[in-house]
Length: 322
Image 1 (tube, one colour):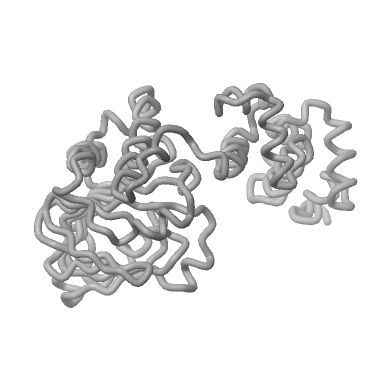
Image 2: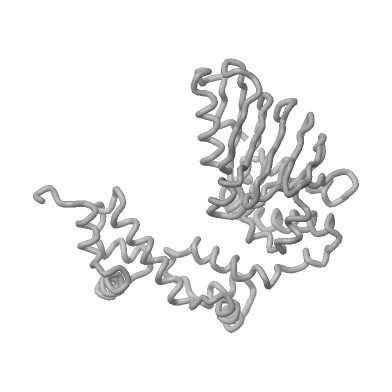
């Protein structure tokens, strides 16, 4: 993976801020305490994505990363991160546990709870960030398995170390059909590692019903702009029947049509008020979010927000003559 950030080319006075912004925007919001003074900070980070999975390869001088209680509470998309120790050692602290990682070891930590990552000897680490819902594992299992060394005593973890250490740095796997093909095997491999370590490998065989609603709603958010988004397509994407889909959503208090329409309207509202709100017609913006009939779009927008799309745009982008 080609580095996208190298502090060797950044003035010392700017290094802490640049590193912080890169980590926050690409991976996760954490407080970063560098060990050496600014002029001696050395960070080299490569970033990529494999579908919804975010990957990072990092080498750096000594640093401590802290996910504070406040940052954890503000979490917008719950995630589980797998840390892969390449050389040296580091420590992961979360949920009242701490584990020492040596070369060949891995550990996971959750974004929804505070954690600390200690790299006193410097960083030579790879991080793979998974949407929590994609793993389809019970909350209790994830809490029990965080900050636990996944290493030589687990043959599946040994396999995962080799696989994920390469996934994080192989550019060909970060785009196109190769990335698409690697997503599900990556999710299933981490599921297998965690469930076998926990002693409940049966959970690795199939996604859990308890998390199906989360995975369905996440899928819908990712495909809101698709005109062919339908119950049949959503059900097929999750290998369930349409009837089962409606039953799962109903238990979560979700009416599929209303839920999709509400979020599409919210996207239209955001786009109309945004900096590019006047670059396209109102009808075009509505069509982009699945509202084929412009009259119907205006009607449901006003019913929902008490103002027409045109008036809402004018309110946020007053014309020059006004």
